[in-house]
Length: 371
Image 1 (cartoon, helix red, strand yellow):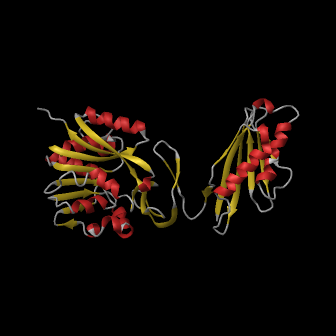
Image 2 (cartoon, one colour):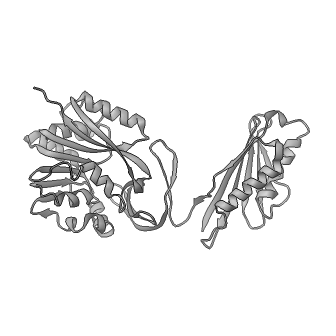
């Protein structure tokens, strides 16, 4: 069963609310207009200052609608139905037709009528909603939960998308989908950067896509540090088209997979003097927490992984980093400021990643020459 909510609003002139309540009585007609079988005598609650009211309408089938009247002229109207058989009649055509009826009914009383052309769906077999980097609502086309695992570290979801295939989500953040090869191609600059006989460190990457693609480039050695083995287990079963058989074993002729916190791996590399040709960050950047990690190294910025990675690449090396959505302007500006502060420079490539439903910023970073 799924509860579906049609959400709309109208605007009326504030001075139309008079003592005789004529406008309010007209608005009450929205109940039977919008809710089939609406019963008489809706409940009313006075909210705050005079003129601010909440009306609730119900019908015999158990559906309801709520109308919130604001004294400055905004009127919100929400209609909720329970869909029990999985088939909903409340599609875009239905809602557009309803909006047209409201405009016709209110006539010159209203200055604006708008609605979402799809209901908000709650309680169904899948939760399709996520938010963009600037917190706009996104509804994905998920139609099934393929796998749902709670590890020691996080919730691991594989959702099936009709358009994008299986999609990995960690704590409800989209990480990678079967449609997203452009993400790896752009992040790693496959076909432009030379990985042959190079030493590479991948931070995270539990979906297996990056290590699988870089295997084809004949590197000297790839080390992948993934903290959560459960991610690997889930992805090698449900994202087989992404990782192939690369993660079936954790040690190969020119690669190894470590089940370790990548921050600890970076720390060990710094302490031992180990240098890589490429460090590839497939993580979300997170703030410094020196007390929990116990580092002696003094971080100059909030980008902990960035600082440690620049310590770990060779002078001629590259740091390839997953940034954030292009719409997350504050994050992007802060990250780029940190790169410059650390004496490095970058090329940012903005690319639309299909299962993310957004443009993502991916970085190629290198140290500026000190000579």
